[in-house]
Image (tube, rainbow, N blue to C red; front, side, top):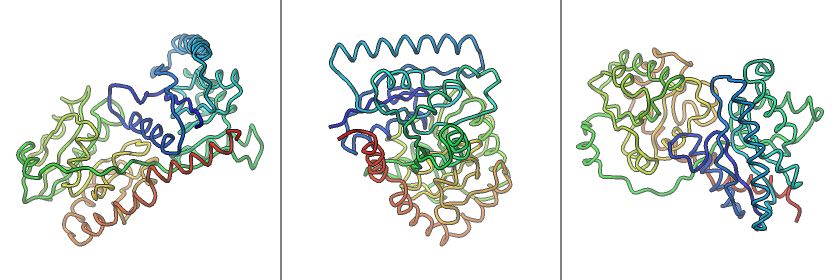
Amino acid sequence: MPEIAFYAPLKSPGHPNPSGDRQIARLFVQAIETAGHNVTLASQFRPLERTGDNQRQQRLISIGQCLAERLLRHWQAIGYRPDLWFTYHLYYKSPDLLGPYICQQLGIPYVVAEASHSPKQAFGPWQPFHDRVDLALKQADRICCINPVDIPALDTFCSGHHGAGHKRIKTLPAFIHSAAVTPVDKADIARKYNLQPDQPWLVTIAMMRPGDKLESYKLLAEALHKSHSRFNLLVIGGGKCENEVHRLLQDSRVRFAGKLDNDEVMQLLPHFSLNLWPAVNEALGLNFLESQSAGVPVIAGDERGVHSVVQNGVTGILCPMRDSEALAKALDQLLSDSDRLSMMQRQAPDYVEQNHSLQSTAERLDDIFQELIPV
């Protein structure tokens, strides 16, 4: 059985804090295992530098080199040699500082997924990390794209270094594992979160942190203020900005669940009517897929890769990005049209199963690996 070394520099699948990145890392491990390969977590080293501190990037690069050499010595001592190295999510704030060197030393294929290339960083404060992303992309045998927004820049970069017509870029749809769950009793949910059984239940699932998430919450507050529909909205998430988000969402229709793990969320979802989220600068929105899988359509801002996980007009409504008026209008119209809402609720699970299943991704990954691993 082929041995795959797995690494996620931005957030390891074993990281204690839940997020979309951690969830996708875990899903990739599941998909690779489903494809019939053994997976070893190569490292939990997190070379993340958010501020553009040149010296810190250089220190992390040095640490990465030392860790890579130590890992090679450890593998040699225990007699382990992977057939392929797989890195999930690298970009100029969190590059792969281990994989390229180790693959060169062992002479094994190097595959990356969800890589992004930002030429404007070549001469900015993240130049050291940007150069490491360049190095990784030049060396990668395959680049798997799950966010269509990344493809044009990657295609330009790869064409410039490998000539037109190269075949290293592979598209993979975002995916989830739609495992069967036992929903909790609706009456219990109503009591626990003070939700009114005679009103539609909406859900928002997002961390409460500075930056894009907080901007989304501000837009959400504006949209709620402009909506005149009757509903209860349960907000699931926590974080540094929790107090500010609570102040923003001072609306009698809003309830807060705090931070829940993924299994708890999946048990709640089947009882909800809609997932509402402005999605400011949202790379994909994994919870959109999870919601649709549970029969919960989505109303979201059409930004970055969101359109690749929601079928507009079929499994949800995508609004012009950062437009609270459009979000409120879509919400009011859909809640007032029960036939259309019911149709979306029926269509959403089929869409996910046909286009975003773990099994289909496992098969695609296996095809990619078979091209690279000698029989």
